[in-house]
Length: 192
Image 1 (spheres, helix red, strand yellow):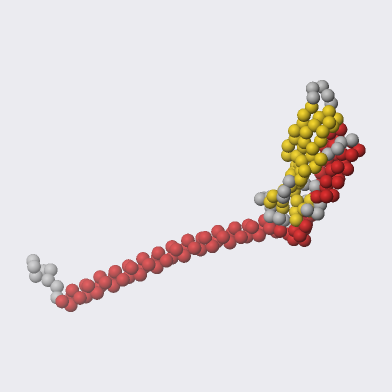
Image 2 (image 1 turned 180 degrees about the vertical axis):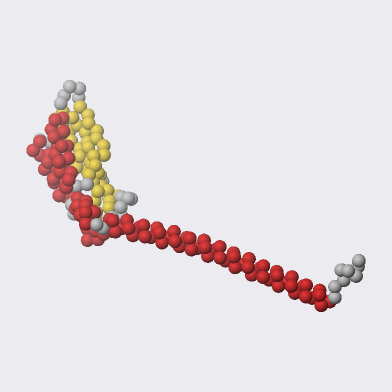
């Protein structure tokens, strides 16, 4: 039986060469398949990115249709130009109060950036009054509301105090205005 498994030196070398060539072939196929799967992953990532880019381009194009451009321009025109528009705004707020017999003191806060839109800031104005007829105050706030299509504003807070049955109140109302810098009006495409 020992002679049955006996192989000559040439057979050993041939078997070894055959095994080495099979090992090299297996290694080459394995490396190529690994590289092919990585290429497939990269191709899928690239297709996903191209899809996202095309989607964003479509959204950008939808924002640039005529109606959207007109709406954005109307909103831009409603922003208060900071600081150039503040004196005019204060004059208008006091002018709305004068016919109603209200003496309004106005405090203007510092400008702080509005995080949602680049180039837009926020300013709070506090309207202070003393001994004002309640009905006149309501009329004054309605007058501000009627002027609101000219500005982007929000009534943030109010504090009213009265004495028992008297119709006069004292307190304050805080308004928030959205503003843009004077130089930013020329760069209006950056706003939206």
